Amino acid sequence: MPARLPCTQATTPTKAATHQTPAPRPAPIQDNVLAELMRNHRVLLCEAIRILGSRDRAEDVLQDAALRCLTSGAPDTAKEPRHYARRMVRNLALDHLRRDKKAAAHAGDETLIPACPAQDPEQRLAGKQALHLLAGALCAMPDRSRELFLRHRLRDAPQKQLATDFGLSPARVNTLIAEAHQRAVCATEAARGG
Image (tube, rainbow, N blue to C red):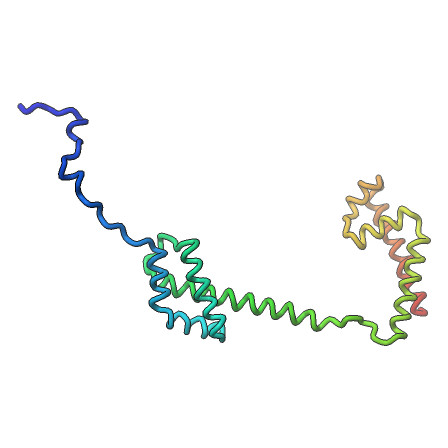
């Protein structure tokens, strides 16, 4: 019967096993995607131009894709680097398009608002007079009513919070704000001559 070797001796590698060269590791997936971005540059550029309508913006998209590939890396789950690269460029182009449309919409909004709604001097004078009467009405109000009205209407303070701060019931706060509002409306209507 052969002698049994202890477990430590049975698993000791032989000399031949220790000098084997390690198996080559596959290239990281981001290297494959980056290679696809470079290899299919023209096709991907055409795809981005088709979406964006501008060669310069399409070039920016491809640079963004390469940068993302280098910095964040592609997920290890990407089986097809070619498809992953194309999807990345397409999504980035759509993101750029959305961002440009949103910026254009906001820029368009600013141009539609007139600098001063009252363009003629008579309207400006009437507005100043109404503001003066409103300020007078606010000054004539009791301090507590004025403070409740201003904090609620101008600072969006909830009535429940105001009730707690002033030690009043929510119903009383509502009544005081409504009375102050009515005084303000009467003052501005008097300015209009109504």
